[in-house]
Length: 339
Ligand code: TYM
Image (cartoon, rainbow, N blue to C red; front, side):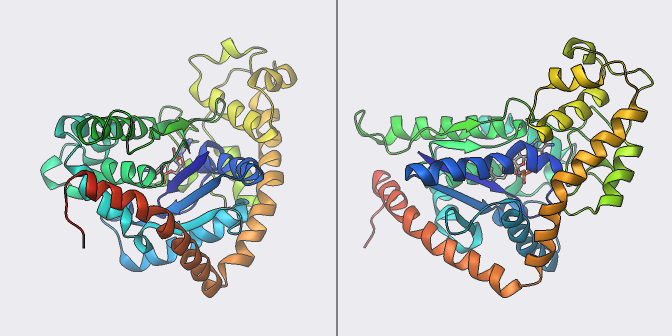
């Protein structure tokens, strides 16, 4: 098994990233390193330039994200932790795959439609070809499994389509070049929603900080955000079906279940019939209990920027070594002459 996944260093790590993806990165690291496979986790800094950005912020966010990932439990000794910018093979493979990806496929990507909005003419070319770089990220390492939240499912399907078409067009039937990667999406916390709007996902790009719990929030901030989270006036139901049509309530109960490592039904068995006046403080306390140790480690790690840079440098060296053979085979399959 080869596990590969990435995160954009465009701001704070939030609860949606953690429950939707990073927790599984850590779980897979435990499992895979015991079985002798590899986990590669990277900062998608090359993706981050697809939107307007401030260079100095990208640099500091990249380091902070390394600190946050290590604080969450990613161990650079057991997983390969790096940033795309130090492994140019990602960008090279993207160009090679641009010949296989179709305009129509990219035009259908919901992230492109959402982020470009009405102003497609003014969007960057990088935003449009973003999913091809994402395909290169995983195909470069022959990833078998990609732990992500639900919002990345479509991009992963595109990576499979690109791999399949490339294999069909340029490889012998019995010698495909690319492994088709399978998304691994958690059954419970696949899509954590905004605390202010149960119809929007929790996101770094939401202008309101009250919409998300950052992994770096202190206890008071967490309690405040949960207290102010949007809900409805009804008490909690005793069964899951009773949450239908109550997006905000459903989201908070799902967060509780994911953090407590239990099911939505088990949470409702405990809190069914109770109002939010009782449930919210319990959720806030659980969040503080689970996030405080991560926050504490993060605060210690972020200070040592030299150590964070060293982690990325060492990880990037290992990643390059794994990337080169597949990249070379791709050049050859396309008939490109290499010295
Ligand atoms: P990014 O940086 O937006 O998010 C990182 C991971 O967090 C998950 N996630 C969520 N999960 C549940 N609920 C939410 N509200 C929520 N918000 C974010 C995302 O699904 C993701 O798993 N394009 C990717 C980065 C990327 C990548 C890759 C991922 C680049 N190349 C290759 C996997 C494989 C992105 O912008 O994720």
